[in-house]
Length: 452
Ligand code: AVJ
Ligand code: FE
Image (cartoon, rainbow, N blue to C red; front, side):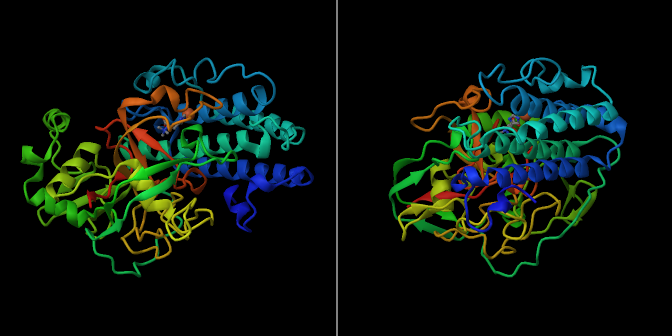
């Protein structure tokens, strides 16, 4: 059970008081166990040799992710738990800044057996301390178990990174441990239909201190101009229309940087697609199929998203517009944590939590709808926005600047909403992801917006 699901009775963790901190500690212990069980479920089908191989310059050898997950847990849940923060990233082999991804394959990495031993030893020490710390402490790191949720989210996020690696892996395809399929589409939605926001003052970001990352804070009021936004993510069918209309070859739709990317990459379709006479075929892990016209397009970069939007006579939403469309309840004059309200995310509400191993046709999750009328904002594909990754006004880095602050600037574009490969504890309306505009290894799609 995930930690967030323990809040399903409507009691947010932030209201849990001192008397209940033993309950909170045991909820945290089960969430930590569940997170590790999932990580191991994902890597169990992978051979030792494949765990150690650097499959792509963009990705770490999976064994590095495993060692890094454990080193991060040790750093934050044993060393930095109380008192002064010694290091914000662990020194040594598993420090991401000392060893950029493209060189991690050349590191002397431990065996799977040794990594598992280390993770188990760290976990024993973490659990012993968990039952001693004061989760009602005024220290914001401990208060309501914040640092534990941070470490949990870190593992969830690395699970998605591992899935990106497994989709890119060389040699034999990853035998995905599929555990469920999305429900059949029960709603008929028309791709390209738009809903309108009439403009006004809204709240963006959150004050939450129980789970939100620093980059989601603080909640702040923004005046937003009227805009229109797609009811669904752009589908494979829509994207094929763009390809068939010669979209990749028409310079009118591409920015200068987009044209440079086109020239250097030679790409003419989303990653993992190939043309098979009758149409397009796509591979997701070990499953190849003719593309489903009704599923959101996945594995496109920012430049492809932007070009499609221009071709369609639209544009990409800003991340503020995206968040308004996902979270603003105009009739109540307040923001929601999820499009559907406050119920924690789960694979029953949206296509998240990995084990379906694919996107789902639009209209498969009728409750995954925001007050404005946008479907599928959580799950399926991360959605590119036109915004650079920047601090919200009043931002303070906490508890470590290396999570977000060092990445603020104009090199990265923000993505929102999570994908099928995102764990429910690591997604919500205010959650911000970022990557370079040329990247396609992420489970990324988009929806369009327009001025109104
Ligand atoms: C938020 C996905 C961009 O993978 O670089 C993992 C998440 N930060 N460990 C990344 C992260 C530290 C981060 N992204
Ligand atoms: Fe990390």
